[in-house]
Amino acid sequence: MSGPTLELSQVSKVYLSGAARVVAVNHASAAFHAATVTAIMGPSGSGKTTLLSMLGLILRPSDGRVHLLGRDVTACDERSLPGLRREHIGFIFQSFNLFAALTALENVLVPLQLKKIAKAEAPARARQALERVGLAARTDFHPRDLSGGEKQRVSIARAVAAEAPVILADEPTANLDSRTGRQIIDLLAELARDQGRTVVVVSHDLRLQDHVDRILWMEDGVLQEGKHVPMTEPGVSP
Image (cartoon, rainbow, N blue to C red; front, side, top):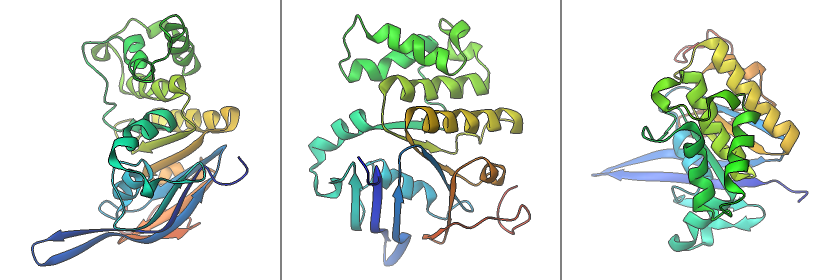
């Protein structure tokens, strides 16, 4: 499709806590296109993860619309949302979310099984995904035997194998050293460039801003376009 893969239109998320009204996201609008890595940056507590959860169809907005592949998904009923997430969105978490009892290969197979990929096809796709992220020699390793960077690569391989057009990453470098973190961002950029994925990364790690295609800055629930943040900006971790 020629338009954006994912789009927010005047999206807000409001929570009520007793008599208090907390605006986590305040009328955010943005379009996300294929073959592009967008970083949503800002200090902790600024609303980034809430925004990502609405992009990933985990939270419903209090107001505004979310469009996925041209479809208004805010109008979808709850029963259809798991299927939309499974088919179109790959999630990468800072805590990796791997099953400790499963090998790297078996962890990558999980979303393929949920998508009901043929048993004859799924293992080959999982192996190819692990090879794509540089873990061909680690297919039979359990998470306890992998480094932090390798665990994050397994989580990326899950999104690769599932062939989701959208990849959403929540603080994917938070538990990694700077060198490994840069490798992870470079890998996500390769996926966007080579496979046409739409990649959205939420982070307060300012080192990422020179390695992505586009930056959105979020603070106090307000989303701004194109801010380049100095490494010494108050309230933000370098």
